[in-house]
Each structure stands twice: as C-alpha cells, then as structure tokens.
Length: 282
Image (tube, rainbow, N blue to C red; front, side, top):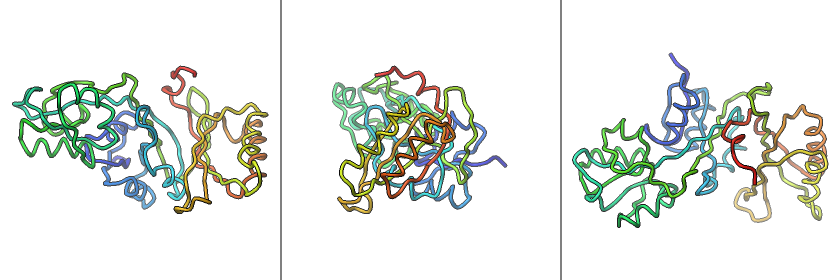
C-alpha cells in the first residue's frame, strides 16, 4: 500500500495537483480544511502534508502561518505549482451559455478580468474541485466552475476556456510537512531554513534581531508578522532564510537573533525548489 499525502480540498483541487506533481508515488488524501490535513499527518493517517502557503497574485493564504507553529510538524520540502485556471462547464455547454462561475474566494480575483469581459458573475465556493463536482451534478449549461484540468478530467466536465488567469506567472507555493524533521543537505539549489520567533520587549528589538543576518551575509527571503491569540500586543514572526543551520554564518545569525527573542523555533530545513531558483531577482 502506497504512503499517503494529505491536502486541503477535494480530488481535483490545486493541492491535489501539487501532490501528483511533487509526490507521484504517494496516494493523495483529500481533507476538508488545512487543520484536517495537518491532523491527518500528526495522527498517522498520512505520512506527508501538502500545505498551500502563498500565491503570487493573491498573497499569503490566510491563517496558515499561524497554524504551522502549533502543528507539531516539520517542513521537509517546498514546491511551486503554476496555477492554470480553466472555465469548466457541462458537456453540452459553450462559453456563451455561462452566466455564473463558481470558485474559491482566493481564485475569483485571479481571473477577474476574464469574468468581467464575458459578463460572468463570480460565485463563491468552499473549494474549486467541489465547485467542479457540483457543476457536473447540476448539469446546468449556465453554471461553470473555475478549476484545474485535473478536475475536468475527474468530474467529466468540458473545458470551455483554458488558462484564464489574469497573470501569466500565477503560482502557488506549497510546503510539504512531516512528523519528523529532515536536516540532510539535499537538492540542487541550496538549502532553506524556516523558523518562528517573538522578540523581547526592548526598544528596537526587531531591528537589532535582523542585524545579525545582514552582518553575517545571510539572505532572508521572507519575514511576516501575525498576531498570537488575538492579542495586539503579542506578535509572532515567520521567517525564511537561505542556508542550513550548520552553516557558520547561519549559526552566528541565529545566535544573535536568540539574544533579542524570548521564543525561537525552527520549523524546517529543506531544499530550495527549482522554481525559486528560476525567479528573477528584484
């Protein structure tokens, strides 16, 4: 029996596509929520979790970064999925028949220009693949789903328009998570280290904490803040840096960071994906 990889959404979701692309030897396990996908890994129902964290058009996936530190899981890899949005309709439909298109709130703005130009009203669904399943079940030519080609294949829908996303570089980044960390050096494009921290209550603590990365030549690729427990006074930071914790410059930077923090937790050590390497430098 093949190992399982959990993802949020139904079969045909972009998370499913990420699983098929990045871990083709694993059986995808659909879960209703990100919390359920994380729990499936933590409880042993799946070996890995495929968790969407950000989209190049929409931004970060709401609440996911606040879930990761409490998950008990470790980031072991990352993968990028080029999000091609397709308008899926019933077998006998044509584009001019469609008056409403259903998709997740994240995906609707990503193809807003196409919907407006064809006078199609965007409607919210909890999941893109679910929208495809429900359109197939409804058998109404006026209704369509915004989803992947994989969803069209699974639910027997007709692709009325391909690749309707507003931006031709529309990409979603996923983190692959496991119960145990993997500190091995691997991959072709170097290593990444992710961690969360809270700074001490001293003047300019964040500024001082970041100084160690600059002085030691460590490139920080991401720094995001979010509230902890709904309190405006408790801010936690999620960061990603290039390098491995065993690298001397990373060790020095983290040592300096610890001096200005009252909480520091390494979330994962993993190889940088090829997509990250190919991105143009700003």
